Image (tube, rainbow, N blue to C red; front, side, top):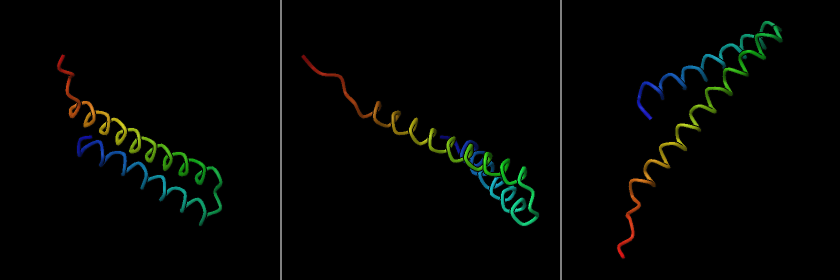
Length: 67
C-alpha cells in the first residue's frame, strides 16, 4: 500500500468520525449516518489494502519447487 493510499483511507475514516460526532452533537441523524458510513468505508479500504499487501509478501516469499 502506498503512503498516498494510506493517507487517503485514513483521512476518509477521520472525516467520517468528525461528521458522525458533529451529527451527534447537533442531533442530525442523517449527518450521523453519513459519517458512520464514511468511517466504515475508510476502515474497510484500509483492511483490504492490508490483505493485499499480505498476499504480495506471501507470494514473494514462495519459491517454486525443484524436481
